[in-house]
Image (cartoon, rainbow, N blue to C red; front, side, top):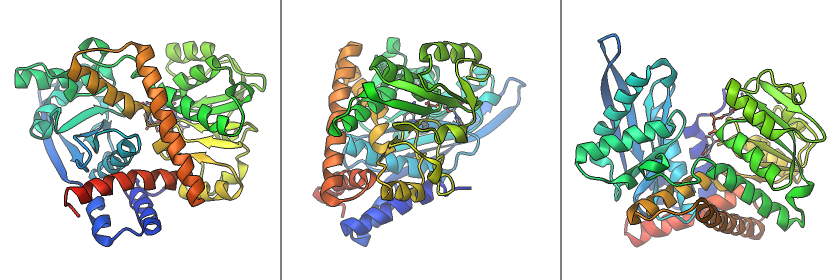
Length: 413
Ligand code: NAD
């Protein structure tokens, strides 16, 4: 078992705090959330009995603006992990230059075990339970694991019905017909592609000559593979939880997406040589993009990695030990807080559009997202060069500088 999200977040904070010479007082403030709520949600199940679920909403920091962050449904959800995720949202939102603080929420539940009606009653109950601390100017929940658009639609509807007013900006990740933003579904993938392109340009390279391997073929990995192919890259390896596929001349990504959409996974696809996930990560390639789950490149397998550049699409796929080893070998890792911030940026664009009741085309959304991502990467790269450090540490330093200066100006430290 690897370290918990909370342990990793606190280790990261301590490491950067030391480098930035932060006072104990400031670090103590950052460790704790400003506000957190634990709620009990009774739900009438289809069998007529009442089952009570536990949920959380943690608002880590409001010094830069109202808090924003996802809602995760998971059977092993823990308060400490929600806190760590809320803290990371503070860092991500600050780094991306958004006028927002970080929050995260969740319910301890396996949504696959519930009927559609039970899930709807649970999520409407969750919204009623956290309503006192929600609001367009307070805290804006968005989607995360287990909360697709239809769940966000129930959540915004419950809030609006209870308040008796239209207020779509209070929830991010809604279907476009209810005030969601165009381009939201592939925003994270689009942002990863922009950052990769930017990193290659700095080395005088382009996507066209890159042989790329992607682990994970879900919302992020599937969209990303397609965007990269459309921009001229060659995807030589893909995988999901059922295993991987390889073709040195490039895989048929459009075909793989149709297959995965029809069969739910890539299992049984015949479009490439079958390999397992360990072999996929070890493929000879220019760019490796882990876009599935955490802790995939670790101390025990980092020596097998042959990629020249690693981009963290998923959250936390490279452990700190593996990152250090890659750094020593001159293999840069573009960290999650830089690479996958596109979803958070477009959630913010969604709020702006809702507040103005004026909606942008997908081209508007993606060109603004592109400008945003380029700025983030350029800033982080500059600080990393100046300080001679990892991109991740540079990103944390930039984000913490903003958060701490807002804390000081408000007289909170
Ligand atoms: P998803 O559930 O749509 O897809 C996950 C993919 O990973 C699936 O193809 C699944 O089969 C695969 N997978 C799961 N376990 C695996 C394993 N052990 N080995 C190989 N593949 C495995 O999720 P997603 O939205 O694509 O998110 C992927 C990652 O990106 C997560 O870490 C998520 O936190 C992160 N992320 C996603 C977004 C977003 O907007 N979708 C935003 C920020 C971060």
